[in-house]
Image (cartoon, rainbow, N blue to C red):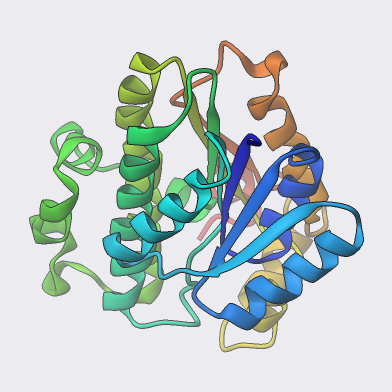
Length: 274
């Protein structure tokens, strides 16, 4: 039996973290598109990792339970890397809420039930969650603590209260951040830790879609006017994940780490200010 890493979302950021942390482990890669999971699995297998691709739909509790059950056949789940999700240019409001908000909450809940003592997880959120205006303490608590099956019924998540797909995405990522805090208390009872990372513009195939999409100029302007003056790389996100998932991060749980080249700082207090 091996220790098992669950990697959801077969993209560049998830793979970078899995390559950094997953050696010697069985790595289960779940993605809604089986061909994506198979492609990442081949790349990693060719580099010596022990990987199994699985079709998984983050918006489905049954699908999440299925990949967990398959993972447990190999051993204890000791690491979770959640990099699955859809972007504002890829999906309508309803899908963003179902996948990025509800799905992430269910994944953290279901893995939290089975995570091994000493286990650790990271979920990839987004700088977007830091951009929207502050919610009320009551709204934040609702996002953190509402039972997962009730989440999408919250007043602030109803269609009439959501402006567009970007707003839906921001709400989903704010929910991720708050849900990680609430889940960290439950994970802590099992001797496990969970944190989130909020990347800015990271060059991935998904980001390149965004650069070439309707908001491409907005994104190019964002990294031109952020303090770093460039987009980031998946490996830079993996640097943060390595700290959080290693013994060096043993005192860090329930936290969110913004890694955006200073774009959010520029948005509030610099040249990106709207």
